[in-house]
Length: 404
Image (tube, rainbow, N blue to C red; front, side):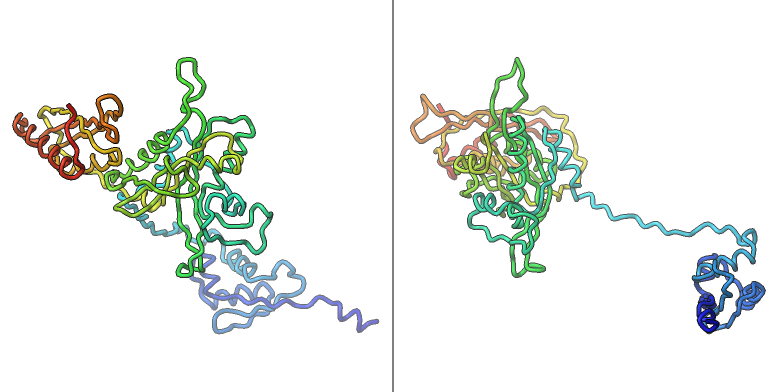
């Protein structure tokens, strides 16, 4: 019985104290001999080592069990009032800020100003719905999905936004403006971990243009509404002239109400009406319009530059041009802007007409040209020459003719 009782007696605890850590925590350099004396006078069995001390703590000092406890004892004996007050030294490094980079929040604020609300949807979506939108897309299947309708990674943000729109429509929300920023996931053997992750900005709108109002017509949104919202985003970069819209054929979108967004002739986005044959299958109760743009194409902007404001009058000239129906108005504007040069400070398409007086297969485009110089008043002959050059170039390129 006596041997068993002795085995249950408290054992002395051994704690290591490092000189470097002691100095770091207290904030001052205390001589090793002074520390040894302090610990010895506390009744501790102290052994000096190469980098500090090995301390055997008596069993009755149950409050000392780790290195920090010994640091506290040294500081207490040394005297807290003897430790000088030294303000910590911290170096500040200016974060890098590129003025030419457009903040993501600025793009989000612009969409909020247009009446959109931000949505956050899952990165894994219903394989059936995604297959309906993108039947030819290769997708990543999750090995352990949380649900059958959330078993593949999204190749676009549209499935999540459409699901959110359906959820809201089922709760009597007939007018919706939603946007989301996130990643798409496309299998790619050449990419890191075999998947290409692309940050994109996407949006969806449906329902009437404005809320119900006694003095406003009940008009539903159309392709030009979503195109205008996309153009508002492009204008923030001040590089809007480097973007263009081109016809596209994608199964998810209406073939006559869709477009590819190009930047320097490279596709960076899509927009248009959800294909009518998919509306009911996706659960939508009305026509919806969507867009999706690679974020990298939007976040680079032109640095503002101060330019001289002309003190001389501007001159406007209007042209009515007859061209084939297949000729895109954007191409007409691009060529007119190129030929007009620096003196053409304003260019606007303000009317498109087809009907009586216009031959079949033709259309009339009305252009407003504003000419101005920053150093002098333009003479009538100079204005006429510039307009004539524009008309001649359009005639040569698109067989355009002035309307009688």
